[in-house]
Image (tube, rainbow, N blue to C red; front, side, top):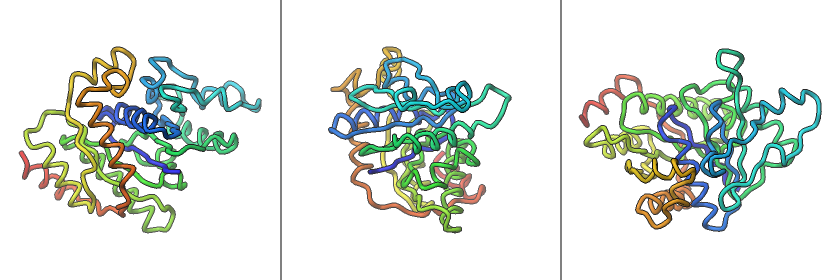
Length: 271
């Protein structure tokens, strides 16, 4: 079983990338489980054709001590992809990471963490508590950083590197960095080169470059992944190629995070 986590800044396109990867894995005949680890609970929406599924944290709150069945939290989406949403608290109340902790505890209890590929879609702005759980507790064996060439996106990716390195240094996790995925914001003329250089400097590689394409928005408006909505498009082929690259990848590393001034110097060099 491959356990893959996508981490990155909020709004960078993690969920779009994760859903299209899951669709591509499933097209290849693999049994796939995608777990949305973000309070917005919209990771699996395109796989579920726009349907919002109950979150684990909502059910745990409602049921208190009453048992919850696997069928109440695990739903079948496109090409049989199993979909789970951790959920989160009401805005301003409680810890957003609590939904992730509750989700993993419940899925373990139900024996539902079984698939050829498990894709964890995790918010990367804050790498603490529950958000670090996929890495800290050994669920996610390999992490892929989803970033653009924008400085704040790279800053968030670099912070995730710090978390991976710290956990590895203290022997608390076997989680390693699999690579960097550039999900283009199309605001930087040398964006791919910049992200490739960032990956090199942290001791990793650029796993894939996903260009900005209108078909992504069209697919989302039709409540589908690009792989389903426009299967013959160039963008769908890019997602399939990215899925293949991840499956073929065995070069997992402990990253060497950059200091802030080093990160800024890399960004300045590619303006």
